[in-house]
Image 1 (cartoon, helix red, strand yellow):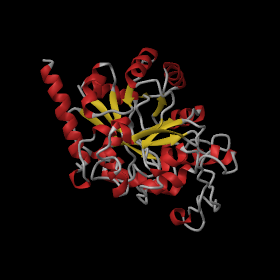
Image 2 (cartoon, one colour):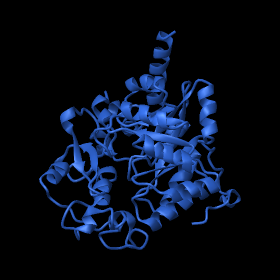
Image 3 (cartoon, helix red, strand yellow):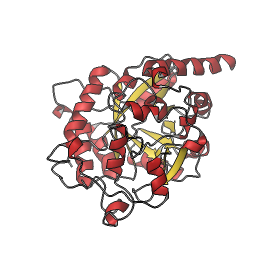
Image 4 (cartoon, one colour):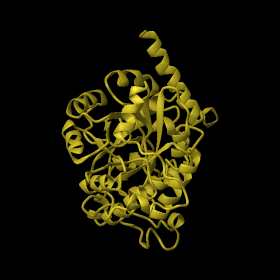
Length: 376
């Protein structure tokens, strides 16, 4: 891929400001930190990223993240522009998974760069190409890291900032024994870049993580449980009133990685070894399928990554089916509801009690301000 030049940006909108390492250090110098919304898989960030980017805060610079996963290039372009419109002058980034099909990864990266995203953050594998494309186009790049070694590598390649995601995170969690506090210390020792702490974070955790040296925090599950965003009502309700017994770690179809989700009949069936081959997705993508792929399997993941494809659909499960059923249809029986461990600390118990994004940010301001005042 040849990265688009800055002059190639489409004229229908004004691109978002860049969340560069310099911009982050300027914020830190003024006494503020980053508050980033995690992208959260298929379409959960839709209608939410712009709200987070637009939120006003005395203590934080807010940044929304649009997930590119499960989107066609046209879908991503529309959602980015929608987010830019909701947050004029706000930071709106794009999350890309390296594990998706190379053709899709390249085209979605192109859209993020063309549209002027504030940053591109990449996880679920490593792609040196995306770092180069971002560097050549002037787009800030952030790498999701699970070790100090990877942090140092991304800094050498030219990243602007890093997201240290501990084992308490929702979805794919890498080393399940590598908790956030230990990981954060390891990453901070390995790099001079700004580091955002992520994974199972609740408002009560934020002051201590900032005191440890984090440039900011990334929250996902807390923003799911808000009145804002397009995710199905039942998807949000699945995150309410949960205890430790309601959270389970499954074996994902993505390389067999561990992944954290809300326990439901689907996760229980997976634990029994049941398989879920792909079904038609015409109900969501239309009769032409996903980018012209009309079969039940739309090849969303690279062939060497997907356990379902490798077994000729006799084992594991179709992750696109499971995640779409959760976020779009609100199917609490057959959907896959990824969540961070902090889901057990969400205080609301009913959909009607859910706060807005702005109210969540206001509460974070109050919490951090109180700790700062107590420290003198």
